[in-house]
Length: 141
Image 1: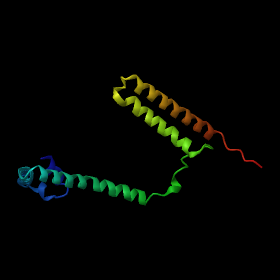
Image 2: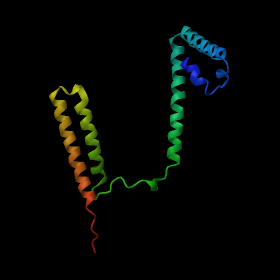
Image 3: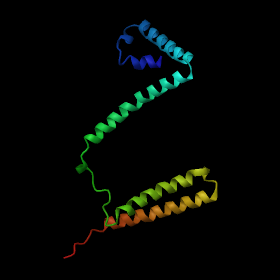
Image 4: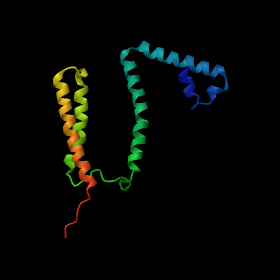
């Protein structure tokens, strides 16, 4: 019934009569049943088709957003005098540290120690960049 309810926003004919909605629901159940009777391979093919139909609109919206994006609206990624690799390293080390600390249920000491070390390295790199970004660059004459 939920499928027919969603489908009725696209096909208004289903809302005109309860019989129309009921017939669409029964037809949907029969269609899925027939696909199941055909075998696992056909069900897998149907699953691929429905997955593509779900992901395609998302990709189209993302592509339209990237196409219409203007880079002038964004501030520079690295506002400090530090190198770009150092800025990226801070972010990457923080993420890796969290991932390692979360791995293995955080009950094994080596995972926790690696996670703390990577998080600390990420924190140092991030603080270094933040401090450097707050100090304006002096012009040399």
